[in-house]
Length: 193
Image 1: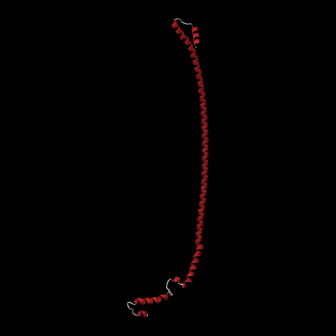
Image 2: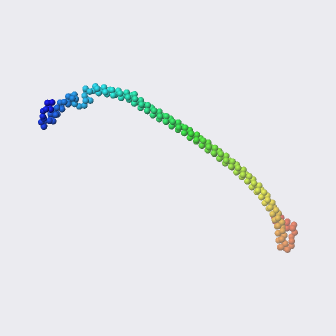
Image 3: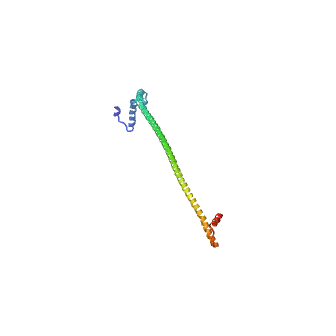
């Protein structure tokens, strides 16, 4: 209270206030100044709190959070493994179906080739039979035609001899004016042939 009653000089006011505050500040904070966390008198309580918080966090991590994370990782690994196994099974099934389809296609191609070969052989056999039939028919027609031609030629040749005898008799008669006998004409025609 004494400090309040004394009037201060205008130039001395800050120094007096500083002295008043300087004297009370170290007493309030326990001396030395600075941060109380670094003061040795508070370290015991800080270590107790540190151990308590560490124990609670360790318990929570060990009993709650890490088992949950482990379950999530295990579930994820199982899901991935089952999805991979399912994909492999589906792939194997698709490969088996593709192999079966290829086998069916090859069998169908083989059947188509055999059917085509049979059809070709049948067509060739039918063609050969028709060809043989046509050849036989043509051979018969040629034989008939040749026989007819021979007959016509023989009859023509027979007529040629008579025509030659007649022509020769007409020429002799015209040249000589007398008719030659038929026996002489025939003998002369035979000698010329």
